[in-house]
Length: 400
Ligand SMILES: *Cc1c(COP(=O)(O)O)cnc(C)c1O
Image (cartoon, rainbow, N blue to C red; front, side, top):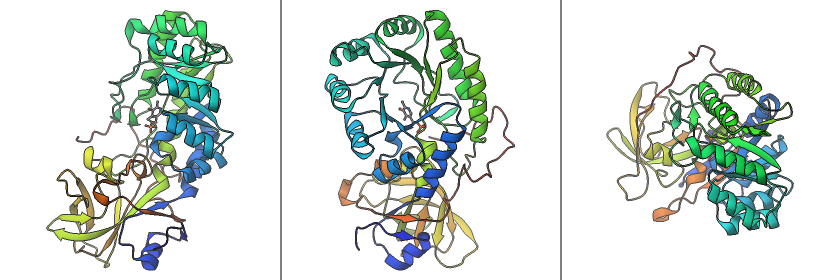
């Protein structure tokens, strides 16, 4: 098989043409562009793409062409990647714990001016590594609850309680522009997650009595998965805007967000082949160490469809990935035609966020080809069909 990316109408056309014996990543540039345009047009502030969700250069180019010009990077390798791929992009180094070397290279070589921090030690590090620069935008990360999100980000980063006031005041002395940021956790199933975060921001501003120039509500905007249909994104934007406008901040303060998942989930799907069937378990050629990390490790359910006989009867299946490890196992359940068998192909949808990005070459697997397709993603938040019946405290829980 050639490695040059080609265009196909859909997974079916690709399978007919290539009969691939390894898993194949499908790109949907039109879906990523649609998501980016949605944020650019409708979010009432600036949208930074969180690169870690999917750093593929093809995707970065799509987002850029749709108007996303700020990028949330978290490592020096991500700084270099985005600087190389999109030389005119504004990079924001939003990992609260960085090395001196990374800060120095980011500032002096790549022109990075925006940094986040959650401790006085990090502030001192940023000052020395940038030789006491006076043109910094510093975003103080505060800790907020992850109770409304499917994936917590509450344990690791963020200043708490009486750390916040001294940190905001010290950062104000150093920063040209001062921000406050937080992250509600990934796949936040209700806009109230952001309201709760913004209320923490309000308390922090009042306690510290500092002028805040940027309020950054972070990532956490959801995508659509089986049994996880979130409210419309417009509702998130409206509620965030209303709460932001009520904060004790100056008229010129900016609102930022850092979507990862919501911008890239629809960008990729995956074609796998069934290599063996054992009862209701299918041995497929991608898995926990490939693009299906979340399916294996946190029981995430992705949509699936089979390319097989026209069987109308469905059954629930679990998957084994190709490596020799027992944990290379995905519980699902994944509903597929009950007659599915070795040699049949399956498309696994919505793996653009934290799927394609997680692949390793463990055990000699992971060499998937990538091709473009032009059909619709298996589900979408942007096709005008999202649900309107949500209840304010609707939180879907999944087992871990
Ligand atoms: C991971 C991350 C994001 C993106 O989160 P999503 O849930 O993918 O939207 C944004 N900001 C920071 C600081 C992150 O660590």
